[in-house]
Length: 233
Length: 233
DNA sequence: AAGTGGTCTAGACCACAGA
DNA sequence: CTGTGGTCTAGACCACTTG
Image (cartoon, rainbow over the protein chains, first blue to last red):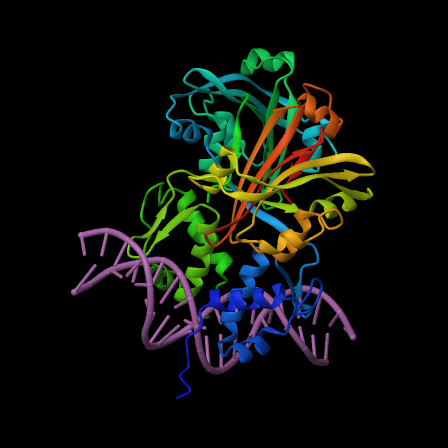
């Protein structure tokens, strides 16, 4: 007897989540130590740990050394967005991709970009304005700033052929990425660039990346009217 | 001698990423087996596994049993969005939160909602239209459909006091969440509901959740003009 | 059928943050 | 200082998937 079932970390996770859902442990409550739970569930501590890591990652609990594990007071809906390289996004929709370099120059960062990076002083960066096209129709316009200190090689890349988006993604990993999404009304400039009617609603994605503490790039990408951003199941 | 350093999974991860970045392994290439890498790095296989799991989670590599580990051909920018309970979002910005139930009724799902859930036939669901306010000014308007089969208790909740958003997040976990974000031009209806000027750009979030295969809720949330969605650290 | 990643265990030590 | 989560190891077995 004493048939010892083997517990999977997902079962353990669901059990713990069950305890939270049936209000055994409410928001802000402290859960038992991993070791204690391992004893109760009859599994190894590392299995409880695996389960807890998942719960923490999904915003259900918070863990701190010495502080233990607590049920989050403020539940969140957590979603992972995959933002592909624009060329692939266009091609996957069955369109022919093209890319046009609009402008490229070294300039001092304006306040908005300084704020994105957390600079207190302007710095010289490479500014690249480019348009992505799908079947020759504007798809996304991007206004990008690239750090010359972190990415010096960028000056020797021909950005008329290889676009900055792709070059950076393929050649520069990032360890931190800030994202900001909002809607903006189309201006006269958008009308020309994106073939948007003035006053139309445009979807804007601002993205800033670092490798460790070193700034890589900050960009503002404005999509064509009707653009949608999805999560992929 | 033969001082055996102890390798952390992050070091291993960075080493493997380094191999990918310096083009030792290019897009689509197959990496050595975990066991082989463990030997090379002089660590346990589980440490390599931990590193690989991180790389896979960040979209750098893809892993398949028997198929091994390959470098992703199409790198992505992966970002995690935390969408908090609206009340907390409002309160964190220092405003007073209020909530107004606009309408509540049982209706058959329209085609758009059927598509979100993947239904082929309409079903009767609870439709709840509600407005979230910050300092008495419209913040987010939500039009929500709730499954009566998966969440029968919802009919006995007084949604004038407790809002559906919060009740569901607190009482119904979800295992799958689809998200769609886009921009929309304000209509005459929005002008009244959100105090938006007609033609202004509005940010829209559509969210559909399931617990396992069972539908929970699908909603369309339209934010007040100027709303932004961020990633957090 | 066999190869490869995924998981589980038991135990040890580490590192961070409260008291 | 001490308690708690985080990591690492070595080894075993499982489960998926491809040939």
